[in-house]
Image 1 (cartoon, helix red, strand yellow):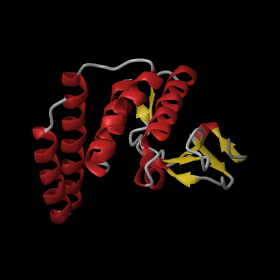
Image 2: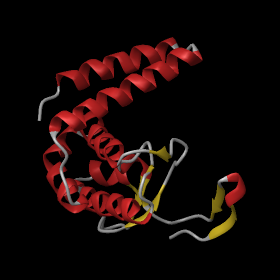
Image 3: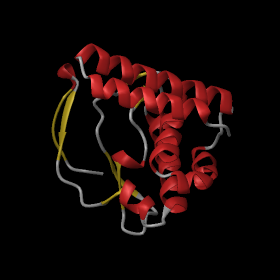
Length: 164
């Protein structure tokens, strides 16, 4: 756990110190998908137990720092999309990140679900992936980011084509 440097509940703000760790995407790229995804599942389960109803909003190996052996998580990064919601949002997004950015590691997603403790239906996970992609596309549209809209359109098309 990083050291808490400051916390202000009235402004819903906290500031933490630096944490040493290995970025999750680097671990997956280095062939440690099984250990990394198991640690992701355990961590998401722990977050849901301790903070029920809190959704990270961008949960996955891209926002996790691990120990060098990929067995343990030392930090969860980038909470700017955090909100109240259902755990399926983070479950589906973690799977989406792996399928989209580390397709070779997708065969290891079973360990993520086992470590989390449940595997929602493919229909529910896939619907949530599509909803999130569409919301990010809409965000780009509101910003006037035409390249972002095109990127998310292609990602929506890719996600639509996935099957379990």
